[in-house]
Image 1 (cartoon, rainbow, N blue to C red):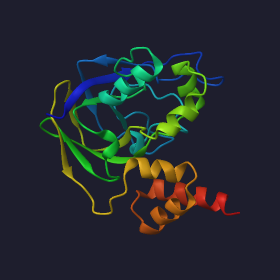
Image 2: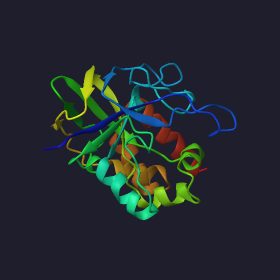
Image 3: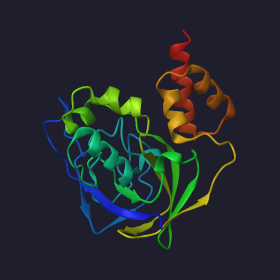
Image 4: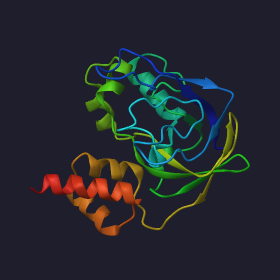
Amino acid sequence: MAHVHSVNVGRPKSGLSKRLDSGIDKRPVDEIHVADPGPKGVGGSGVEGDAVVDTRHHGGTAQAVYAVAREELDWWSVDLGRDLAPGNFGENLTTAGFDVDAAIVGEQWRIGGSVVLSVTGPRVPCATFAKHMGVRGWVKAFAARGRTGAYLSVTQAGTIRTGDEIQVAWRPGHGVTVPELFRAWMGDRQLARDIVDAHILAPEGQAELERQLARWER
């Protein structure tokens, strides 16, 4: 059964960025309450008690919750030669028996009895993530792997607990996966153009990808 392996929250941690603390260092808890935090720049995490320090680049409706498959952590544990605990990638939701990276952008997950989360897109690795991992060339390696986990918005608020079942409640017909959107963000211009023209993204994501394309095409 696809289920929640762990739910994780972070507290502000210093030393990972020159300018700000970071909430990337997340640790397992028994349960989390999720709700829409509001727009990026105003709202932080969609997980109650979870730190988002850099609200310019993180948090807000489209990045309310971050999910990573336990199986992906296991793959990296072998590759890096060290055990990766739940929350090690800064994820709020560690799944088991569920292929997060097969998710279609816009699909909805029902978790437990009432929570509904909607897939908004991939996680793009940054220097803070690299410093947190302490791995030379981490951003390049993570990007090359291309299985980034998924950001989610909160469609229906509620409480998520370890062991809760995860079901795909609805899936759009366009077929664009989270890894494909990641490839578009990382420089596949034709794929980016196709996604922009299809208008499958939420308004914020659509506008951001359009701006990226405009920069590339100058």
